[in-house]
Image (cartoon, rainbow, N blue to C red; front, side, top):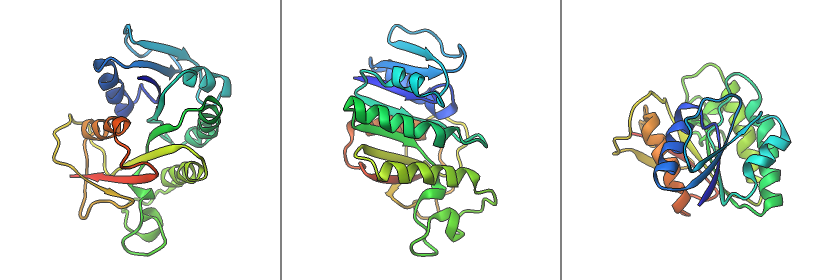
Length: 204
């Protein structure tokens, strides 16, 4: 499979990249500066996710797209996603898996609200959740086959399994999920159609 990966130099994106290369997929990754190790199955596009041409070059010829872009207190994520969606639609590419946040899952406390709006989340800062919600709404309105993986507190750590998942909600009393298990679950979605059109909460 030919994959386009955004955010491949980040914590979760880097783990997804390792799995994709180990399994023999052909990967094109966009990066701002040379951070990724060279690999025979890895093509690198140097550029900026806010630049439409750089996104077009990264996505060209892909079978699926994975975005592990974060917010990092900027609008990078919401600036990039319209370009990603447009490039996919023009290229006839349907499948996209993105890493979101548990804040955009449905609230268990207030019906009709998301967790960050309903008081389910302890986080006082809502900027990241609002950015991820904008991306969720963009994907909802697209014709793409999307899945948003929504981890809760995300400490470093290898995949150990034993985690729980729930469509559109955080599993009951979920407190954390490792970077490794988040990457593993997201990567598995390439072969799994069960969660298309859903946000998926992830926690131990």
